[in-house]
Length: 65
Length: 144
Image 1 (cartoon, helix red, strand yellow):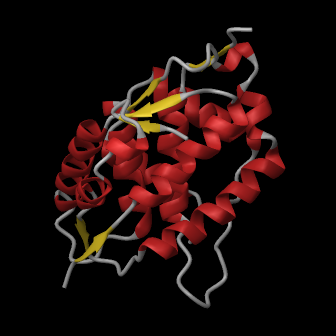
Image 2 (tube, rainbow over the protein chains, first blue to last red):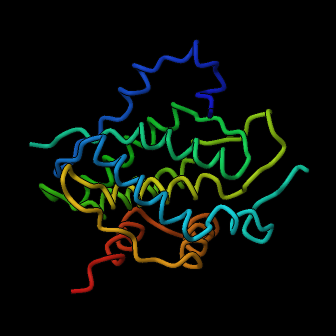
C-alpha cells in the first residue's frame, strides 16, 4: 500500500487527508460516483493491457531487476 | 449551490492499482496533493461557469497532478515507471469524467491503448495547460 509522506499507516492522519479534498464545483458528484467511474476505467485499461504496455522500456518504465 | 468533490479515495485506489500492476512502491505527498486541489479549484473557477461539466473538472485535476507530481518512489522496490504521476493523473481524470451516478450506466471510454499511452507520454514531455487538458477530455465524447 502506498505510504502517505513516507509514514506508517498508524502514524498517518487520515481525517486531515480527507479534508484536503474540498473541491467546490457545480456538478453534484459524490465520492462513490467517482469510485464507480474508476471501476469502469479499470476494467477498460485492464482489457487494453495498459500495465503491460507501460512496462516496455520505451514507454518510460525502468526495472531494477 | 456548489458541493464538495472528494477525489482522495479514488486517488488512493488508483495509486494502489499502479503499485500492484506495475510492481512499484509509491509514496504520496499529501502537501502536494493539497496544493493540487487548490490550483485545480482556481483553474475551474477561471471558467466562470456555475456548473462546469465533468470534462473540465477532470482536465483541471489531471493537469495539476501531472504538473505538481505528488507521487514519488519508495525504497521497498527498485522498479520505477518514470511517467507514474502522469499515469495516475490521467486515470484520476478519466474516473471523474466517467463518474457514474447511482442507477446510471457508465459512459465508458472510447479510446485505444495506443492513444492512452501517447496521452500519458505527452503529459510528461510536452506543453499543456489546464484548459487544453480539459479540452482533450471534452473531445472524448462530445462529437455533436
